[in-house]
Length: 473
Figure 1: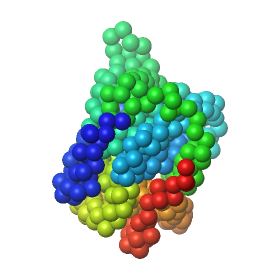
Figure 2: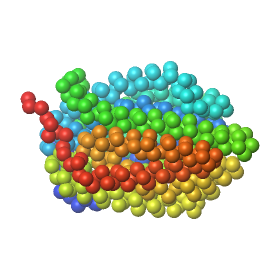
Figure 3: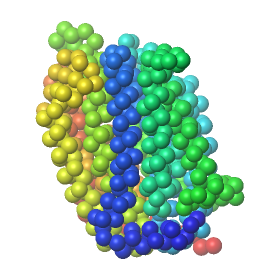
Figure 4: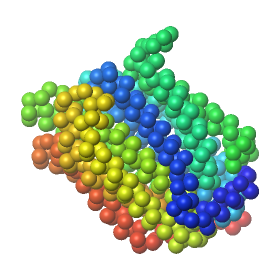
């Protein structure tokens, strides 16, 4: 590990101007997030040319893939907390050990997830109540994405490790390259341009898998060659069971929280298809569930675009909070978090206004379907106002994770989704017999979740470093 380089970054993170340091760390992450969103938007754009069923296919795959990835994300979160706090404490040797343990753990876990996902996809899609018209597209797309999971996981671990030491620029360069490759390959594989086969929805999945694979290989090369702040070797990849137990102890609550949240979105997909079907039956509209889910898919892409900015700020905050907590600078960590929440609320407030004013033009850009554009009016009326509040919720959740208090983030995740969003979305949808109730339930969950998260944050119970529990050696 390049101690001199990390020491300079550590000094700025722990003692530099908060907003300036936050922006220095955040802007590469924001660029990275925007590039990722650009890929998703482009995917949606090209698939929208095929039809609403094809457009909906990636949206059905996303909660399933996220569910399995989120289990591993919990351990990546634990590894991030250890690495960032060791760096904050100036113990670079232990930071390197934590990095190696995390990377090897991710590799083994990802292989298992990929195999299981390919086999279980048909049963999972049926559980989600995916319509018969969308199902064949979703099945092919999801299976290919699962086959590429090992590469996605190791690329994900690479991003986490470098962000933990304060290097937010290197992952961005790699991710931009992989996403640009994806953008170029998408239309060639989807429509069969030039010598490429015409694969339709499958082509979008193949482009994603190939791009992530290349990014993962480049990231692995940089880690093992020592050309970035972290230098992995075969020695620090060897199983370290006492340290693994610490990663599991910290990571399991986060894994439970993330995976139950992801599974909640599997249930939410089922709710959207169910309420859409109910509304269609009530109003005599055939296949309205496809309209409802396609509207949700586009909305999700648009909100992800707005969240690219707030997520970038929150991730940069995570690095600053993690290192500040490791250095026992708790008041600085609190101030960093509070300024992040204010910035996030402002960014998402502006984004929401643009979404409201240009809704029709935005949705028509992706698919000129009058039924979907009409449904999007309900999104604006019942859901959009809640988006700035989600910025506060996400920031608090990231504070808890970065400080290593993963049980708190687990409880927050489960509360917002399982106590608020799912019951409200389904209950109000059934009571109103309208998808408007479903959108209203989603919006209320963001607002109420943010208020609870903020109250918990202000209690300050997260201000304790997990490396204080270091066993004697």
